[in-house]
Amino acid sequence: MYEACIGLEVHIELDTFSKAFCSCPVKYKSEINSCVCPVCMGLPGAMPVLNKKAVEYAIRLGLALNCSINRTSYHARKNYFYPDLPKGYQISQGENSICINGFIEIEGRKIRINRIHIEEDAGKLIHEKDRTLIDFNRAGVPLLEIVTEPDLKSSEEAKIFLETIRNTAISLGISQCRMERGQMRCDVNVSVRKKGEQALNERCEMKNINSFSAALRSIERETERQIEIIENGGSIRRETRKWDDANQKSVLLRSKEEVGDYRYFTEPDLPPVVIADEWLQKIKQEMPEPYLSKVRRYEEDYDLSKYDATTVASDVKLSSLLDEAVGCGADAKMVTNLLLSFVMRIVNEKEMETSNIPFNGESLAELSALISKNEISYTAAGVVIEQMFESKLSPSEIVLLKGLGQISDKAFLEETARKVISENEKSVSDYKKGKTNALGYLVGQCMRKTGGKANPALVKAILEKLLEVET
Ligand code: ADP
Ligand code: MG
Ligand code: ZN
View 1 (spheres, rainbow, N blue to C red):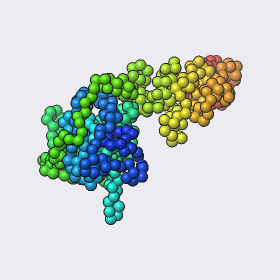
View 2 (view 1 turned 180 degrees about the horizontal axis):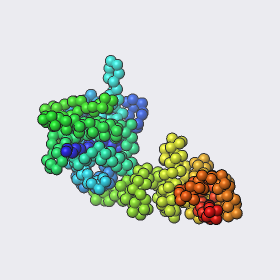
View 3 (view 1 turned 30 degrees about the horizontal axis):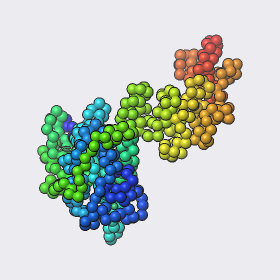
View 4 (view 1 turned 120 degrees about the vertical axis):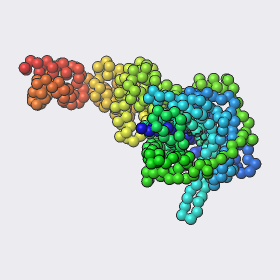
């Protein structure tokens, strides 16, 4: 039996106002070559100046991924030639990266982070029929590269890892990580070995994968490819391969002999990055809560299921609504249910971004109080939420306006229950035969007849009593 050893190099584009080493703006979709200057176009003699925000964002991510923050780090020139890199080198970091030796826990396993470093993005080549054009808007945009140790064991683990990195970066407000915009890309390194072996075998690398699904498929196919070679008596050579997602296979780009020697050396135009105590403290204190600690807090303090905790924590707006509602005294589980059922259903129907949800956590707290005080039914809360998307009225105002107050009038509910019993002979006889779920159906029918306004607990008690008398 074989196992895969997978190491990822994840690039995320930072959501800074300006580029890594010049003051050109970082703007998605602006006119071609409109955000450029001598520095990011690599003109000779232009001097780079490091963007402080990019350093702060790197530190935020490093802290969230349990890294040590290198108090003095250096930039390095990574030398290679490519048309979208007119300087002939990329400013990156080498041995002395800003964040080192971190880890995150995934499904109870530690995945070690070797380092996180700052580097600049290259320009974009636009291939036309008989010529290639170049857009330098992206050149010099700050990237963080997160390099893992080869600790991941499967494509599923890699998927959770990538999702965790994305959710973490978004929660920290440092990147939007939209893969479809190229704001998150990864290189996938795969080797295989017999289960139980300690030593790593030779690996292949697939570069610049830009969707989660392509990353997962490339891992699966590459693992299979290597196992097959070994089973047939062959051996794996160090290669850089290109993943062809359309044809679901990788093709050879470069073999080991050609693997780049980038001749890293310290960037002479930039001073060392020295991080002062006070600044590090300030960053720690002011940074938003990282995704993984939110998940833990929701499981431990709010008693949410793992699924609910990760779902809410992975969305900045949903988690701020939840925290705000709980801060106003609401029950966390109740608010989570409202968010994940009613609110998200409407968000999906309207195909809107959660950031545009038009109400706050205080309103959700008010709504959940109405439910827990039995003033409205849970079903009616769904109607209230629909209205909260359409108007600025408060939940109580909507309840009054729409007449959604819960019906606890026993005589009226008994009449409704009798009607439902007479109209649903099959369920009644099922119930009497001991099928207890039939009762739920009958309660549901009463709710329907009252437009969701009946008090469900009362309806249930009344139905039970009536059905008992009848037998
Ligand atoms: P390089 O300098 O050639 O890019 P690194 O040591 O920086 O090599 O590793 C790059 C990535 O490759 C890391 O994510 C690392 O975990 C992964 N990697 C290194 N060796 C192996 C291996 N034998 N099998 C799988 N992945 C590996
Ligand atoms: Mg590498
Ligand atoms: Zn510039």
